[in-house]
Structure formats: C-alpha cells, structure tokens
Image (cartoon, rainbow, N blue to C red; front, side):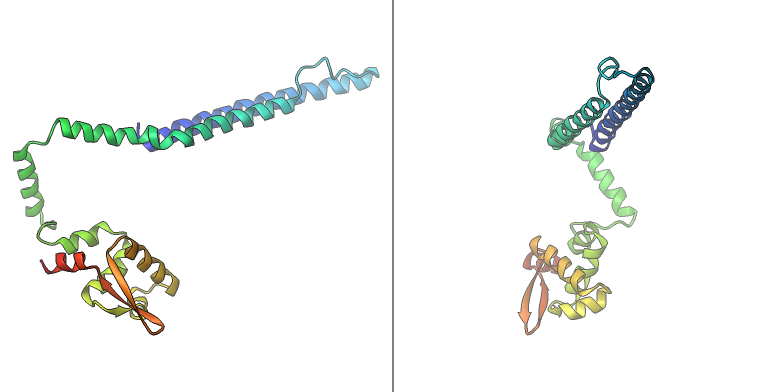
Length: 197
C-alpha cells in the first residue's frame, strides 16, 4: 500500500469517528437538555434517568481518534515502506531483460535525452530541485565564485543563498572557503572530476 493511499484510508477512518462521535455527543446533549426541561417543569431533577453525559461521547471520540491517528503515525513508515522493499525484491528476483534494457537505452538516446554516463554534470543538475540548481550551476561554471556574486546571479536573498549553499555542502556537492567577510564557493572534487570527464 502506498503512503498516499494509507494516509487517505486512515484519514477517512478518523474523520468517520469524529463525525459519528459528534453526532452521538449532540444526540446525548439534546436528550440531556430535554430531560432537564422536563424535570424543571415537574419540579424535580431527572439527570440520572436520561443516560450518559455527552462529555463521555466527546472524550471517547477524541480518544479513539488520537489512538487510531497516533498509532498510524507511529507505524506509518514501516507500513508504507514495505512496498519499496517488495518492489526491490521483485526486481532482484526478476532482473530486467538485457536486450530490452539496451533498446530502452537506445530509445532514450535517440529521443535526444541526456546520457548520464557521457554528461554526469547535466545528470546531477537534472536531479536537483530548481533552487539548488540555480546555486550549483554558477559554481560549476565559475569555481571560486563569492557568495555575494552567487546571490546576484541567482536572484535569491542572502539567507536563501546561505541556506542552499549549506545544504549542498552537507551533501558533498560543493565546499566553501572563507575570504574576508564572505566565502568563495567551489564544486566538490568528485563533481569537478565528473565535469571534466
């Protein structure tokens, strides 16, 4: 079961519990009000006759929703990650046909797509989100660019450039060296080697 479907099923279940619990709470509240009006007309208290307090229904609804929703969140990753494991097991058990893989590769190349082996730089840039690509492209084309120049080229704020550079640095795609009050930014050695290949 994929994550989106599991989220939808559990969300629907919690919503159903909330709706049913709300309806029961409202019904119990209406009964309580009716008995209190009847008791005030008769001059006696009839509170013990009418049934459970509506707050018990509210409490039960909240508790059931919390148990189901919270329990699902605890096991969510395990439940939804089994699909990925099953898919990798199926691929390991049934490897793709080498001839079909070659024909797929030929079709991809003939369609004008990028060959990742021939152009690793393009492949890395294609895999990145747009904001990270806008930071990494100038670094690849001008190694040693300052963070200030990078801000001007990317049209990002100073903090956005800093956050994105930090994220790319943590992933090992670039590194920076302090120069005065700014940094010079360089592509990582691995990325530079791939670029020159």
